[in-house]
Image (cartoon, rainbow, N blue to C red; front, side, top):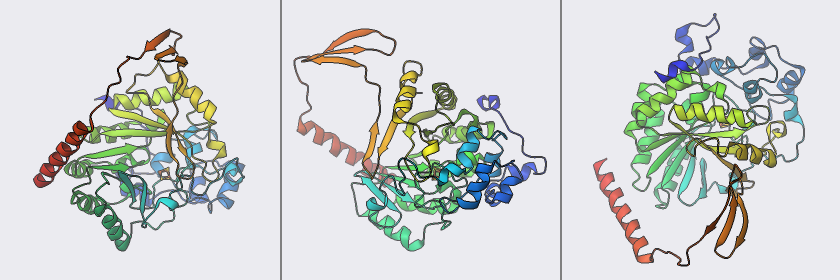
Amino acid sequence: MARLIFKKNPPPESISAENWSSWRWQIQNSYRSQADFERIFCLTESEKLAFSQGGEIFNIRTTPYYANLCSQASEDPIRRILMPRKEELSTGAQQMHDPLGEKANSPVPRIIHRYSDRVLLLVTDVCSVYCRYCTRKHFTGQDQAFIKESELISALNYIRTRPGIREVILSGGDPLTLSDSRLESILAELRQIKHVEIIRLGTRMPVVCPQRIDESLVKLLRQMKPVYVMTHFNHPREVTEEAAIALELFVDHGIPVLNQMVLLNGVNNHPAIVQALSRRLLYLRVKPYYMFQCDPSLGTDHLRTSVEESMQIQRALWGHLSGIALPNLSLDIPNGGGKTVLVPNFQTSHHGPIRSYKGWDGVEANYVSPAIEASISPLDAEDYVEEWQEILSARSTQL
Ligand code: SF4
């Protein structure tokens, strides 16, 4: 089996294999206080300062499993993701409480509606690890846990009464911190809404608590198809044997998995690291989808890369990773401006129909556009829309 080639970090001797493999045990025994972390790590002065002053900026938490992936080195990449440090307390170049302008795009509690055909539904604010670079610090980690019944009813009504919404992305917090039965009740409600075609689940659990992904969960997701899992691996060391088993369970049950990584200073800001991560994920049939520029949320300057550096990394990957392994470098325009994809520019000149290019390895050539402009008549376009509506209603009668 492919998964056997990935590294397994043995649990500490004091913890039984049974506890270690239980996702509930991992969450219930998360490290949250300075004392918890000091049992495992020799804290630096910078980390101690952040524990004493920084918990108020953003909650601190990790599963024992994820902490076990760190070495004792203070600059260990995974340690930089999970451990607060004093730089979080400094004023940075840009410090935004809500970088994506989500509050302004929240028509009812727990719904974020930024694009016409899709919404985010925030089903919990809890994560099993609080990543220091989190973009949603204005919401995540306040321990309100499961969405209130009244909020869920109004969120579902919002979706139900807007036929233009075709995709619902369950997010948070991490939706996979919910039990299967809670998840099932939300998914079943969504599947009753005919115009909701796709459900996505944004989760970091395959990375930080892969024990959560078991047969009963994947069977539930398969039953609610089409469900896409959007996961969030940032570093090749996160792709352990346990994570590989979790990813294979999804894919073997027909659940597509895409990865969204964030470029982070001192964690993965090198083309060789991105390449190693992408190759491992692709081997496990996970599509490396986005490589995000880190959002300027509070206390993240030490973790952010410059746009120039990110573009250099992207350019260095071009030509060395196949298209299916290459994630799209993307930046979220602050204040809810939406995504912009950052791609290397290979065009060197443009005169009328002639465009000149210089490729990633220096090959130069012209591309000449044809004189005739092709177009699809509006009548044809209508036909496709109608045909799709018929397919969807036929499908909903089968459910
Ligand atoms: S798992 Fe996602 S939502 Fe949770 S802290 Fe990390 S980045 Fe933020």
